[in-house]
Structure formats: structure tokens, C-alpha cells
Image (cartoon, rainbow, N blue to C red; front, side, top):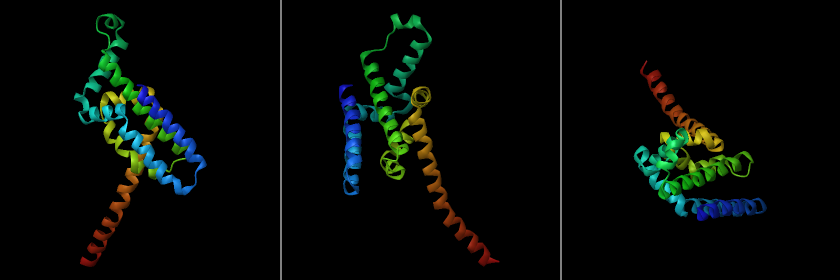
Length: 177
């Protein structure tokens, strides 16, 4: 948990440095931000869990946490294990980091296309686990906003790719007449 917190503090410090640096340092700042995100132990642990989807230990830990919140009697008889707590805290740190990305975009401190290029998988495909989506909906509005933003970029890109192809088909159909 301390390492993940350090990563978030480091990212915020990096953001402060980014504000004072010129355009030439922007690429290096983005590279450093991405490295911190991909190399932090807790973030790696969450990504490993995301690959297992709904069958992951993380999804099971979230289900256990939700059951404890719904039934106080379970808290004494079946509390979260240390491993479950660590995974849930790691997920919170992971989602907080993605929320920071949305915050930086909204504050015009990070270009949404650059953010999309670096973090879209982590915010979209990687989080398509029902238990995690519920967690985002309940507690991480900035991540929900980032997911909507990235989905919009993806849809615009898909439409832009489809438009020339459909124009070519229409032109071929016109020639056939």
C-alpha cells in the first residue's frame, strides 16, 4: 500500500514538474508517468488479476467485501483476509491513478489523445469485470468519466476508419450501374 501511495504522490509531483516544463519535456514526463503506472507492484498485481476476469481473486475479494457490507453478522465470522484487503487496496490505488488521468485531462494538463494512447486498455478492456465496474460506479466517478471519454474516442476512431471503406463501396456500386 505504501508503494502504491508513493506512486500516486510521485505522479502528482510529476504533474507539478510537468506544469513548469516546456513542450520538449512533455514526452519524457508521459513516459515516466506510464512507467510508474506499469512498474508499481500493486498496479501489476491488479493487472494480473484483471487478466483472470470474473474468476480472479480480486473479483472474489470484492464479492466478499460486498457481502460483508450487506450482512454485518458476517464481519465477525468471515472477515476479509489479509490477501483480500491487499488486493482491494491495490485496486483502489489503481483506480485512483486512473482518476488522476481524468483529472489531468479535464484540467487541460494532459492531452486526451495522449492519455488514450497510454492508458485506454487499462481503463476500458482491463476493467470489464462486473465486480470492478460496480466498484467504479459506487466510488470512482472520475474513472467512470475517463471510461466514457475513452469509449467516445474509440467510437470516433472506429467511425473514421469505417467512413472511407463505406465511401469506397458506394463508389464501386455507382460504377457498377
